[in-house]
Length: 316
Image (cartoon, rainbow, N blue to C red; front, side, top):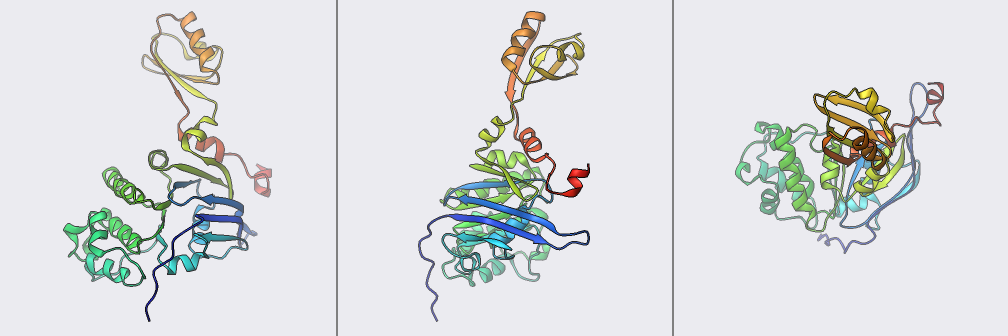
């Protein structure tokens, strides 16, 4: 029987009223609590949040690996399992190992044969930088090579949606850089990418949009520049010797002050007011820099609030 290639995609990814609860020894664990989310076709989105925020559970429901207690998930207008079976969705999850005793090419070719309209195997190897090790056995690969093979397996179905759950967690700095170079090349083909990561700089550098989760809910959603702007604090750095940080902390608009050698670092709620007061009081200050809050500061502020719905949160 001939399997038809997947139809043109439409509608992107939609999560509506998504809820998932697991049983626990000390009562139910509310992993996901009423998520509403849309990701447009061709968008690259980062899913961020502390451990236990509900990221992996949300991804599992998007892939059809878990069923929501309530709510719906559609991937290009299809149920998640249908999208996977049609080759519209590729995934690279945190867990899982490669099948042993196959060459890299044999493994990628075997996975390609499962889908109706796969990418050419040589193209998948080329895109992921694996052509030079295509004949190597999977159990002989380094950690970075293994991650690239897992990436090739995820994209060889020629998916319209690529889901990556902590894809660079086992890689060194160089390996992470190489991985994201490859991923950006894949996304440049107009593919939709959703990735979860603990490396906030990866989200800042590679995502069109960041979705922050905490306690099973979405607490922020938008371009990383917009999310960073939601944190009102700015950091002022200057060269200023022999001034006690406690004196600087008393300047208008300063929330906190620190010193590293001759450099002072002021966290400011009103950097304009602070810089004027600083120069008025200490005209010898030089090399002044003012920067907005980074994604890490925004992440900590937006995801750090206690969950008021949980009894343990109320007790602390």
